[in-house]
Length: 268
View 1 (cartoon, rainbow, N blue to C red):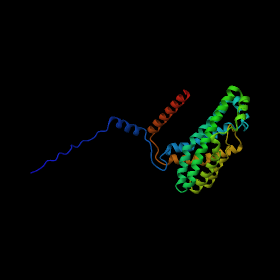
View 2: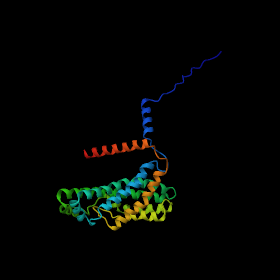
View 3: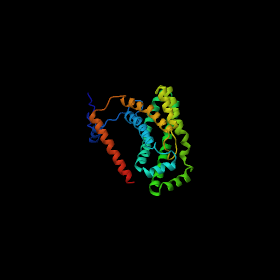
């Protein structure tokens, strides 16, 4: 006597339409999620290392002709509004764009010097947050100079300059982060001694509100460029280059997103 077992029929699942569309989009705009720093990744991290320091240097050099302290910076805004807007805008953008580069540098240091990588990376990013806050105050003061005049804006800044804010506690991080990263990069052999010293020089960049440019400012930001820009080029080359069509699609998408963000941001 034989028994017949009922076995479920074998079915071949077809991908849904949504999955198929997502697959095609992934192929059209591939994202690397591998290597030492899957986030932010080779492309974002490499561009950050190249573009961030370059924008900082641009901002510093544009305000070089004007005296260092805030009354003269506000007076320069009144006389040269476009130039000063470009200077402070480039510096603020460079500050924000630096954080992915710091993440990549920290990851490379952490392979052999995790302690220096951890604290150097944390302090450097906190320092970038503090400088971004200062950039917001700069923007407000420059707007006051446009609408109330440089003298009235200078009076307001002088009266409120010492006001407490939570970011005051991060002033040490602004300087200390670069020093720790420079030591870690040298000890981990991520940077040679000359470029490690150049990275440490970034700690000398003046901090605070409405700071102009001094020779020390130029040395500090030039050191940052010397240390990080070649590393960014190395990171970008550390892997296959995308196909031309893929690169053009990504450039178009990034440009469209940037325009949309600007338009929506202006709309409030």
